[in-house]
Length: 138
Image (cartoon, rainbow, N blue to C red; front, top):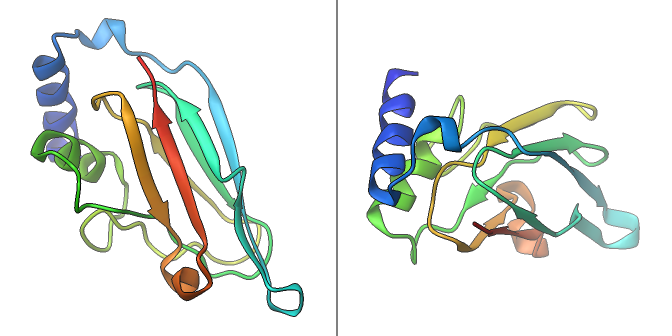
């Protein structure tokens, strides 16, 4: 917990923001769905536009287990650290725990990161191209 707070504080400082300037704006519910019979594997919606402080509420609807893993290859060091710091119960680099059973939820507060595109996928369903995009705005 302390390391995630330090990561957020460091990110705020890098962007010239104070904690008072970043507060929860909105909760975005993202449904995690899969149906092998229909070849359906998706985040719904697959694209989320959010701001620092918004909450992403990932909810398993069908086909659990699911997970959220951010693509780390193109992330700057501070963005990488901020995302890692915002992921509770992380099981690996930029990786949530498995979210199971159906109806389970995973919450992530969007950290202070530069505006841009942050891609993620479901590890158990990666071969089925279950992907999403977080667009962070100012």
